[in-house]
Structure formats: structure tokens, C-alpha cells
Amino acid sequence: MKKSILTITLNPSVDKSSSVQNIIPEKKLRCHSPKYEAGGGGINVSRALKRLGILSDTFLLLAKEPEDCWKICLKLSN
Image (tube, rainbow, N blue to C red; front, side, top):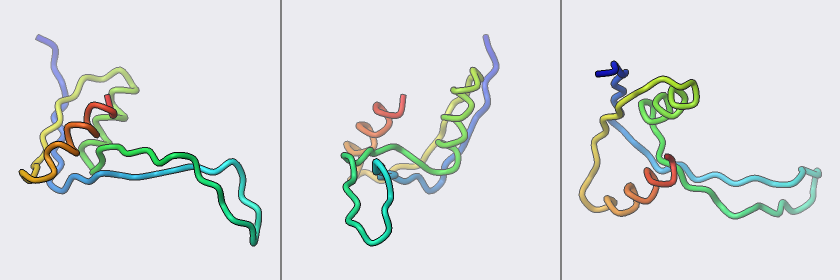
């Protein structure tokens, strides 16, 4: 059995971000489509560990109502 690091996220979030081609002062920004990712301390640490090739397990607390949103975000984060 391989060992892994356990990360704990007590206050998870859904992070929404976008990007722009370039920034020109006093001009309107044209953003690309938004990207949604699961976020929060432990989730972000686990994501970084995965990129480094280190196994981790993530424990997080979820409310019942936004469960579907979390399932989608966690799938997209993998």
C-alpha cells in the first residue's frame, strides 16, 4: 500500500476565473469563457501535489444543496 498525504479543506469554494488576450489601458477587456474549479486550501494543495507526482487524499465538508455543482467542479479538476 502506497502512502499518501491527507489534505483537509474545511471551507471549500468554487473558483471562477477567466483570461484576456492583452490589457490595454482605458479599453474594454474581452474575456474568454469562464473556468470553474474546486478550490480551498486543501484542494489546492492536493492539486499541486498531483502535479509533483505525490499521492494525496482530500477531505472536504460539503453542504447538501450545491452537491451537484461540486461533483462537476471536482470532475473538471481531475
